[in-house]
Length: 147
Image (cartoon, rainbow, N blue to C red; front, side, top):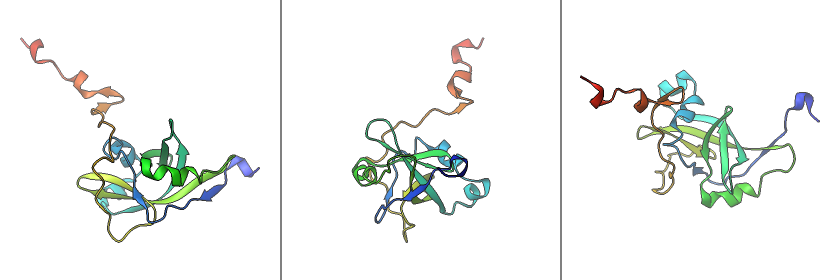
C-alpha cells in the first residue's frame, strides 16, 4: 500500500490519438478544468487524463478532478483492454484546445494540427444555462404575467 492511500498510475497507449466525445454538452466542465489564464489565452493546454469506467460500456475521461469527456465508441475496446485491475489508475496524455468557439479534448500526444471532429461524435444535448442548477428559463418572467 502506498503512503496516504495514493493510487499508482499506469500509462495507457492511445496510438495517434482521437477527439473525445460530448464537448458541446460538457463546456462547463471543460472550462472548470482550465485556469483563468488558460481560458483567456485560448492556447492548447496539455493535461494528464484519467480513464475510468462509466455507465454500461462507456469510458469517462477526467482531468484535474473534473469529468471532461467520453471515449468515442470506436476507441473504447483499445482503452478498456488497458484498464488495470485493483487500485491502479489508467492515465493517458491529452490536450484541451479551442476550435470554432468550443473547447475540445484531444486524447493522445499533441498533433501538429487538430482534425475536425466527426459529425456523429457529440450526441448529448447541450444543457440549458443555469445558476446553481436552476435553469434560467424558470427565472425569466412570463410574457402573460405582465399587466
